[in-house]
Amino acid sequence: MGASPIRTAVVTGASSGIGAATAHALAAEGYRIVGAARRQDRLEELATEIREAGGTCDTVTCDVTSDADVARLAEVAGPTVQVLVNNAGGAHGLEPVAQADLDAWQLMYDVNVAGVVRVTKALLPALLAADGEGIIVNVGSIAGHVAYEGGAGYTAAKHGLAVITETLRLELFDQPVRVTEIAPGMVRTDEFALTRFKGDREKADKVYAGVAEPLLAEDIADAITWMATRPRHVNVDLLVIKPRAQAASHKVHRQDSRGALRAGGG
Image (cartoon, rainbow, N blue to C red):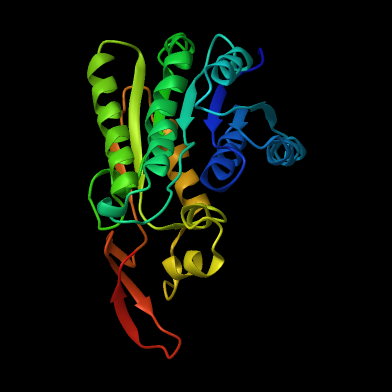
């Protein structure tokens, strides 16, 4: 019997958090990983870890707001891609609309919305060439479906991503590619909250204070891998995934240092 054909999975934002965990999970399923992110040193660590575990990983230093970087990503990915995980994103600030930092808003839009479109546009021919195995998994957020105070810039961007996903599914309804979105709730990763609060560790830690079991990056990676490995006729349009402690963006079950239970925003 001949060797199994190589299947390629492209993961953006692969240098840490959900992206890195997803790269590991898909590599364990036998995919050749093409990891893309801005930090080459972290990508090299990822590639080394995957290779030491017996997997295959190529890396591309890539800012999804750059046409040239994304073109290079498509070149490294090759003519056939089975999985695209649009994970690069991020939140910046929690100011109300009246005090909005429009530079931060623009950055969130450029990465979470335009960046996803740029990468998808560049890789769509390779996904369509995958003989019905192609799937796009857009990593959104519950912020893309429910608004909350102080989060308008991020929720606007993630709502945009959700609508792009829906529109793309309509436009590609007769093409051999699946279009999906995963919308995580509270996920504790090394950098998401730190980025939002410009490196303020105290503020970042308060996001998860008293929450015994927030989701981990590995939980989301497991769900993404499940979505990507469904039979080719199965399209998981939207998967909302939250920790048990989180009923909504603003309603989270927390426990204070004395063991008392309280509700609070997430």
